[in-house]
Amino acid sequence: MAVRILYFAWVREKTGKPEEIVDLPPGVGTVQELVAWLKGRGPEYAEAFARGDVIRAAVDKVHVKPTAGIAGAREIAFFPPVTGG
Amino acid sequence: MGVRVQREDFDVGAEVRRLVGGRTDIGAVVTFSGIVRSDDGTAAGGMVLEHYPGMTEAELERVEAEAARRWPLQASLVVHRVGALAPGDNIVLVVTASAHREAAFAAAEFLMDYLKTRAPFWKKERDAAGRERWVEARDSDDLAAERWTSPLRGAREA
Image 1 (cartoon, one colour):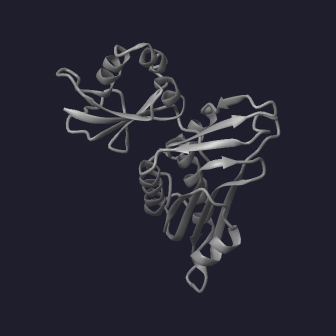
Image 2 (cartoon, rainbow over the protein chains, first blue to last red):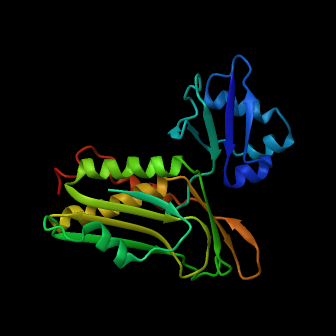
């Protein structure tokens, strides 16, 4: 399954890219499983997700918890806690 | 009702006139303006605001709809700036309008509290020496937003 992954703020700086299209392997069915898989893709990902407990996620532009399913998702975003206002 | 994300500055008076001008069903308008602050020098060199286009607008609309569900609002507006900002610049505007002040005050506070913990914006500050730093989220903002999580909070309590 091909899905668009987006990174923002310091997560973007650490991965070195604002977005990418990835083919999800079988067995990656939740946000936290996706994070674990991404961390294995290279040192920049391991570094970006080293503080995995801090990073927030959104599936198709809606905030989700790490246990949320990603089946059928078109767009998954990872970012630090928000600091607007 | 409306939300906007923009690079340009906004004029508080003009925004209020556009939102409520000519209406006679509104007895109270509350405006909140957030301004780039550098009292401790951490943003002396300004800041850059990044956001998640598409989700930002969707999240602001969800927060605004929730405010309208909780309080009898006649009108509301959220404007948030992105891009490069300097100390003293406007950064965010919330306007709420209702028949009476209680709903307008409470809804404005609710909108700001929820915006700060849910809308996908990130600030990167630059100090006077040019050192850059991502602003970290504050626990006090989460606590401020949690005040509103009781299902009884809102119109029935006002």
